[in-house]
Length: 361
Ligand SMILES: [Zn+2]
Ligand SMILES: [Zn+2]
Image (cartoon, rainbow, N blue to C red; front, side, top):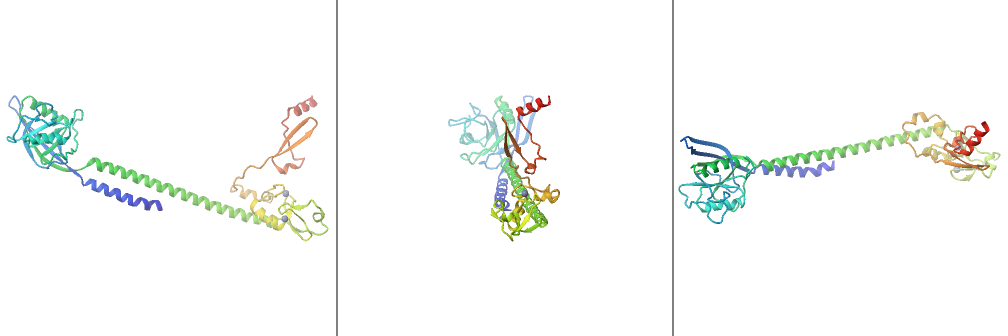
């Protein structure tokens, strides 16, 4: 099917995209913190809960956690830390926001930090993002969740010395991109399949209908042929009434009958030239004069009834009958009912009804 061929390259492209994006990795970071509580108890915490920034070297870094002296978001351009040397090694802990990741990272780098840990904004729980900081290279930069960042922030703020080690965790696929592309390609696949199925169904249906109509038409034609074969023929003679009358003529070709003409006599007793009426009956199956159904009259009706296509309703002939003061409009739906005996007119006329009631009373 044509549609299938169009979609195939698109599908290939999409799967290519999925594969290339699956190759994009981020590295998780292992964050280890050490500090001594007031009661001399040493606390050591370790989790693989950080994410290395896109432009960060994937390396180990360690030092004493240092906060910006003013705003915890640690944006420049002035010095933001009370440190100006890289020894003893220190790690900057800054909050996300106010300026770019590059700004924060560069501010710490300028003052000799061994690494930068950015923690997420309030209300983001422990979620992290894959930071992009293309203007700040050559320094380890990771992101951690808000809860974890705030916990360390509070300890340091209260004067606790917290030692931190940032270590390389494990590589990961870029879940979001891959996830969405997979979802998209699945959706695309479903839509494509549905479209193909729909077109297939429509075509099959049309083919089936056409076949059925063709078969039906064939059968109707052959039945009409059979019916025509049963109609009596007459060869008109010079003495026949039809050849002498001026008013008698074939209603199909509108020509008068001549002696020697071969005519077909229909079940309604109307006659027509054999050569004129046969093609007409094959097509219309009724008398051109009185609309009498020759198939019905010859007993073909029962077999064909169910397969006959419903034709447009017959025209309603209205005969106006004038008698006295009353004017009656008589609908003649069935031309066969022209015979006065079988005719059952419905007179929708109150004057008439009144008269007949008066006559009865
Ligand atoms: Zn004719
Ligand atoms: Zn007729």
